[in-house]
Length: 308
Image (cartoon, rainbow, N blue to C red; front, side):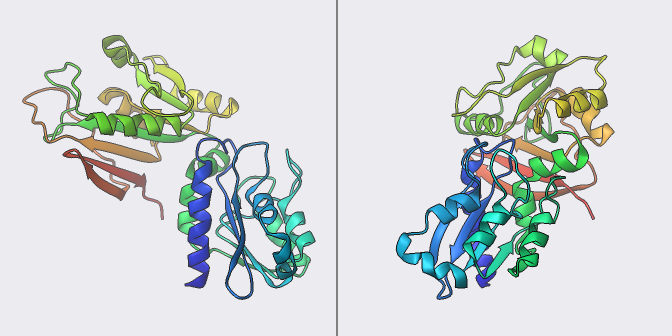
């Protein structure tokens, strides 16, 4: 329970880096003294700047530095062991002389992958791995998918009527409320690219920006009938695009579903009833509901791909 308590705080801190840490992962770190007091904490604020561990140690007050030798550092992701834009965090932890390091999960990045943990153990530091591992992995699912599957993390998204139509008599129709529209723009700010099909682009001329939220506009992509999705994913990977939202019509959405190219599905359902139109896609068999909430009468459900 104690380990989960502090790891939960690491995750809470890590989420503060959602917009600026990428393409690096979101990471939080907490330093706890032997008498169970948090004496330092931090998160990775911005790519190219100090990692979570660096910021956590920097926050320790001078009068508490003598406590480090009996302290535990909790980190949501394995400390890095390589020289990038900043020095290895594993070396910093060793130099500070802490007694124990608790990691949420191993970093899948090719330059880390357990090396940070091994370096800490070889230095005589006790290392515990896998505390709230599922939550830690899900927090950085974009980063992890990008580094393990060599493609962007793919979110399929659509809004539908209560009886399962995504338009009204085959014409564009707004199912979102002003508040849920704002949430859609928040999602855009959190991802690198957004895609619609050619028909949607020509019929609705969507702006696909974040005008209702703070952040950078995602890269705008229009899928045409001659686009090879697998080749497009390879190209986006080469451009370091870690995540993409697919907001197209049914045909576009099914092209990703049928190819198995999806990681997350977000469905907004309005109480409005439509008599005729384009049917919303059927959810793939391998989905698991991970979140559901109601706002302004609309329900928003999030599904992740079920894996063994």
